Image (cartoon, rainbow over all chains, first blue to last red; front, side, top):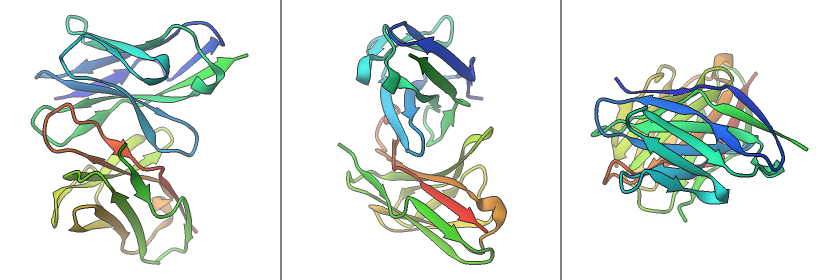
Length: 113
Length: 114
């Protein structure tokens, strides 16, 4: 069965310092992986997706994620946090051959001035 | 850019009312989805549709129904609203082809049932 684990429910960083949001997945087949961001009272916005073309994926707003098959991880990083990055982040895996998307429980990122 | 539009941002309804939540997408996507989002429970799939007039139950379909008469429109219906259906409802769409097709979300409808 497919599953996604976001290892931290809350992360706090200071503005200008690096961001690391951790995601591990379980998948029987080659997965499709996504990161989304949700600002308060808004829908989810796609940050980036893993398409199997490259293990390091660049997304919007300076975010990147690296697919590591040996560690079954897809951690999200950003070199320098900005106040506007404060939001909730979701790691998502799509089950191969089905319509089902599995969501992680989310990580709330707080950025301190 | 894909646009998914949900007809209402905020909705307040009374217990027992029939409630319609509407969602329209403009990118000719085959798949459409309805989720609800609750604190501590994350996103849960209510229903999805992979074609016009086709629908599949998600994880929590009880108390809901859906309608997809046109490709661009997917409606969620609460037959008789109850207080435990107070939630944020999110509509999404995706292309059918390829497993790397992401979901595209609307801005959500925050429904309060009193």
